Image (cartoon, rainbow, N blue to C red; front, side, top):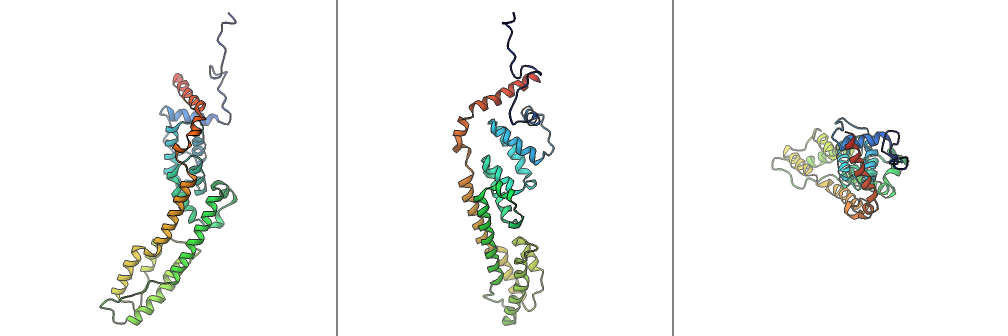
Length: 270
């Protein structure tokens, strides 16, 4: 009779738990909550979401990964952009990369620590530096070279005075706003503040004409295009589509089987 007894294996009873190296009990319970519809709808901490994504990716639970990525995307403002870049590259999430790169481009380089650089990697960090240098140069050019009034309105009675005041107001208004390093502002906000200034001898017709040109954003389309193209280049180079990493899936067939086994185990415990 002794020999006919079924040997006790991990997971068979409370005294023989399943040991998962590197996985905390909290992460496993979070996984069970998600798998069986009991996951609470409140917000999770950044650390919890990051660890849970790593957990689900490790065991090839793709539907769980998609859910966690959705939760991270909706709460992306709570993550530092360097952390989002890290998650996008590590777990092949293209959707969050552009937002994170845009935020990094707008973050003063002095606020990026060594830890942030480690998270995003050298290539992304160097491109952030290049982007910021290029955008700063572009802002200085726009600040120093105002839009010219090429044709005055029919109601403009003093074209010379109109030109002179437009030049002075551009430099003291738009130029100052663009180059204000203490309070960096997006282009739309700068244009809004600029329109609220007093324009002296600039006629209403000429002012309205120049405002229409400003509203088109032609002066900054080159900067936006440069940022977008750089981001697209990095996405193509660093963030691989899941289909291009099938070799990872092949090497993880055992992990996928473990994931399925966990589901069956939890189902039997309900």
